Each structure stands twice: as structure tokens, then as C-alpha cells.
Length: 361
Image (cartoon, rainbow, N blue to C red):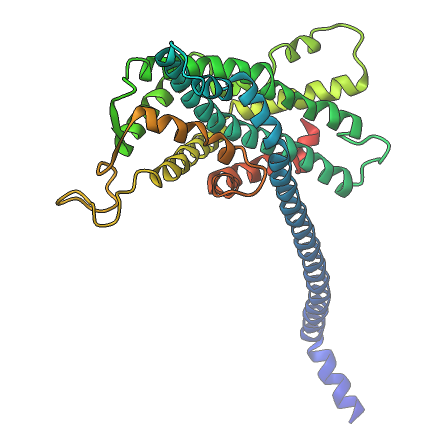
């Protein structure tokens, strides 16, 4: 029996060798495949955990952005009111002066200017802080995730403080320049409108559109009011710059690059559109017709049903700065913070600066 079996094996030796080789190859190929599948699963799990961690960090960073905006609005309001002080004119009118009409004309320009400036500056503040805090947030994520030496962070605390202090330009010289531009446009649009002339909400919206068109068609882009020009001079100095200064200059240049991007323009435009739309919503409350007193053949909420003399519109406009620059989450501020295009832009900034590739540039 063993002889016949051996003869069978000898006759089919090549087949056995081939079959053994195939089976062995399949076995080792299976082991190799299992190893690669296991490595791939571990890599996918690691990437998923990393992505989840980055998403959580991004969301936390956005909450910080929102809280920072709210915390800075009182300072912005104070700066606006200090330069466009209507309260002194209002008090003067109560004394029934002889030049009452002149004071009313000044009050008209100041009231409209400070409300429009409040919308612009709030939007600029919000979007600028989104850029700055997401740049810092992205770098902080890299510091904590790519195994960098903790002794050489990309954005040390002192650098962060120096970099974020650049926001003071928007609250100082930048705001002064913005006020000058807006005030000139308000004068061009409303300077010749009589205090007795009645305006509907639709006509008021048209006036705001004209003012916006003039302000935004200026040779200076709105981003010009955000950062001081003299920051660039620091980078031209051959000596005297500390390592922190060099890091801060790098952050400011990266910020300018983001401010010059089409994504920034889209986000800021969306923010401004929403801001002025919310302003008109607030004003609409004062233009509603009394119950049962609607104009014939007009819808109750029509923008042209009710008209108010400009002199009565001025106090309404004048008080809007308190709503726009409120440090409590008003509908106006919430609309801006929750704007989808602003949120998408924030994600772009964070993504740009939280990827390791950014370190290689």
C-alpha cells in the first residue's frame, strides 16, 4: 500500500509541488492581507480620532470667538458714541435754543452715521476676530498634535497677546477713519432731505443702500480699517526685532493674506447684508400701521404703508447703537454670529492653519 502511494506521489510530484506552492502562497498572502487590513483599520481609526479631536477643538474655538466678540462690543459702542455724540445735541435741544434747526441737522447726520458705523464696525470686528482667533487656534492645535517641542510653540502666549492687541486699531484710528467715510456719505445722501419730509421704510432702505454703495465703492477696501499700515514697517527693520516680534509680524502678514482673499470678501459681504437687514427689521417695528388703519388695497406689512417725518425717524435711528453693540446676545448679534457664510469662512481659516503642511511653507 505504501509502495503504491509513493509511486502515486512520484508520478504527480509536480502537481503536488505546484499545489503546495499555491496553498503556501495563498496562506502567506492571506496573512499579509490581514496585516495590511489591520494597519489600514488602525490608520483609519487614528485619522477618525484625530479628525474628531480637531472638530471638537474647532467648535470650542468658535465659542471663544463668540464670547470675545460679545466682550468687546461695549468698548466698541463707547468708542463710537465718544466720536459721534448725539446726547449733547439732544440735551441742547431741550433748552430751546435759537439755532434749533441747525442742531437738528447736525443730529440727523450724527444719528444716521453712528448707527451705520455701528453695523459696519460690528461686522468688521466679528470677522477680524474670526480670522485672528482661528489662525491662533489652528497653530495651537498643531502645537498639541504633531509632537512639536513644547519649548518652541508656534504662537507663545506673549505673541498671542501682542498679535491680538492689533484689534485696537479698529477701535481707534481705524474707527475714526471709518466714521469720516460714513459721515461724508450720510451727508451726501441725507444732507438735503428736509426734517419735515416723510419717509417710508422702503424709502429709508433706499437711503441706506445709497450710503452703503458710496462707502463700499471707496478706493479703500473695508479691510483697510482693520489693521494698521505701520505694522508692515516692522518687517523692514534690519535689527532690534525680538523673536516674538518676528512671530507677530508673521501672524499679521498671514492675517492680511486672509483679509485679501475672496472668501473673506464673501463672508464680510454676507455679514453686512445680514446686519443691515436686521437693522431694517428693527426699524420696521416703528413703521407698522395702527390696527384697523391700513391703507386701502395694501398689505398690512407693506413697506410703503406708513411714512414718518424725518425728524421722528432720527430718535429711532439714534437709539439703534444700543441694540447693535449690545454685549448681551441680541437678535442682531446672534444673526451675525450664526451666519452660515461667516461660519464656513471660519472653518476655512482654521483648516488652513491647523494642517501640518502649513509648517512646511
